[in-house]
Length: 188
Image (cartoon, rainbow, N blue to C red; front, side, top):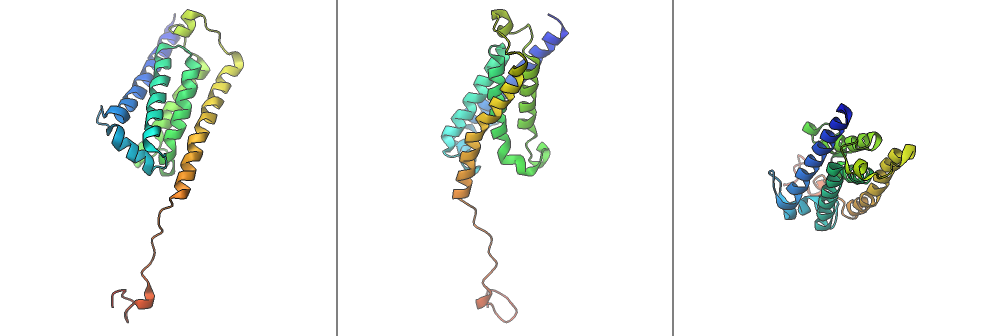
């Protein structure tokens, strides 16, 4: 074991802790979260319908991915889960740009990027993957992990797209000028 292994352990634990915090905000309202029902309403407003099912799925993915990363067991599977989940999580705020203080998708992009880095670097010696002797997937392991995460994000994003197209927001219409008064006032 060396400093790199220690650093990889700290990075895995940090990301796992943050993912657990987000999952607990959604599911039970801890850490000033809104809890399951309110989060389901928000998810539906973002086009993730039905909201309850998507909250349960997001919570499960965050907890499972985080657990796999924290323990270093099936680390690349955990990375793929986190990458896919964070791509989906970034979608509602992507239109606001990257930066979180402007309502952007900085946090899920950072989490997905961190998971991609862990997929590339591997979990290190302080992991159950190393202790149990699970084989490394070799040179194709990291690209396959990242690709799997991206592909896994496609179905929920397509469902969201369909839901948003099915319930378009009503366009703001200008007042009907046919009944307008002499000065264009809509209330003569």
